[in-house]
Length: 325
Image 1 (cartoon, one colour):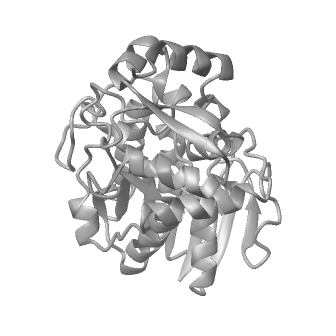
Image 2 (cartoon, one colour; image 1 turned 45 degrees about the horizontal axis):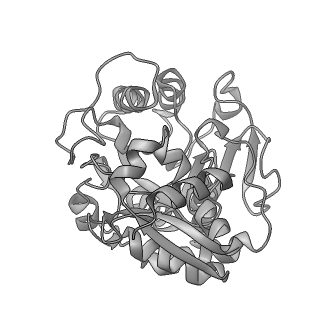
């Protein structure tokens, strides 16, 4: 298959390219050259900025495209319209944030999407979906991804926990430990999107592991084991932590925050029926820890959403105030 990857050098895009090359596909990567230049010598590199100039793609044909970095509907519309006559399948990486009720309530593919013109992440992703579909009706895969983890993660959510646990000592763990979570390894998402491209399967799918496939306690225990530090998880009242922190998702990433019933409540049945098979969470955690041991720089791509993590002094204050008797 002749495949064009828009993005392709960071996190999910990197996994898409690596998987596609392993399958023997002919891959072209269209990116700005700011990250990972020369990362995949077996692939064709096309340098360009999708937000300004798509001329490097003109007159070219591919069997499928996977768009890993579409955040503005104008840019997605431009790429989809340009490729509509020369590409059979458009795989668009969307998000659960496109749903108007998420993360407040559980959602499935029939749930309402944002329809506003607000220049915010969720409404923009929904608008990107509409733009791609308008350009290539019936040929677009809308992969509404949940929280993506795994090696190459530049957002820093799982890496923060691994680094914190490797540092050792008492680690604040907002409970309850049996709170369900659902994540997706970037490598599994990448492989599934390639499967869908190969079969030219279109439509909307929540690209995520099934709800309740793991718990937050299992995640932190696996991270503690993989990190190799001498740490102790101190489980505290999660509701009290949520009342205290201004940005709990940024400071304690991946935590199933109390009150957000839909955060880890995306139906994954349709994607699972279409072949999405997430690997065990423990494998994802182990492989991410091994990647971090190589000392990667997470870089500045999408720095605005990168996890900050809980400051050391703030963690100590919360442990002192919330430690169970």
